[in-house]
Image (cartoon, rainbow, N blue to C red):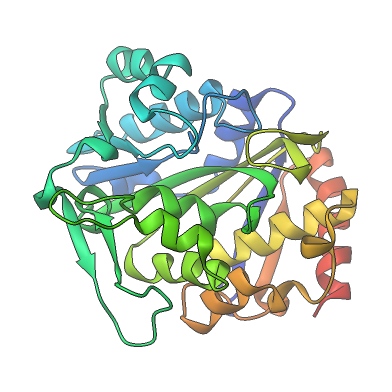
Length: 306
């Protein structure tokens, strides 16, 4: 946050993902990761290529930057919905990268009951609450990298807020209940997505917007190429920025229409205090010419939807 209470969102050109990640990360003091337990959530819902999934170069650049700070530990946790998680991570090169770089990898589907933290709170739209992976509930620092895309199965868009669905159990050993069936069958799905974010911290978000899906998603869709990397610490600001970027290319009606802060994921997250409450609280910070071009398009959409 700036002294005026605005969330800074940094935008850099990134036709090369590694250099794009490195550029946006220069705007953050990563020394706070030193000696801490760090959990990282990427986007490996399926084994489909980027932008359906996190590009291995994006993940490598981000993990390498964190590891340079000598954390007590860095652990990637993932649960895929469209495919076997371990198979997805193997096929996408994540397993090999974790061995090469020296960070841990946990397949959340394989956790025992004691690997999950039960969430119950008044006002939730989850009928039975939900279970959050301990690796994220207890980490000193949480980092995520997400993709730019729409979501045809009721989420409408999948950016940083929806990326947190992969931290929640589909099933918990000993309980005969499918939490993901509830989520995807509920008319309150987008509010439920936002509610997950109330119960875990996020200290750094890198949104890979080198490519994106302006329709379809999450595994395939109409491809767009903004060629930028976006980073910040505020999930609501990141998602509002991502939605504005999607709108600048033209996107599906559920994402295109209405005020950005009236969209259910964003509105509920803002209501819960997960992040900023309005477009006025977002400060776009372009870091190069490509970032300036993208920032102008994004700001135009934010200004239209205040």
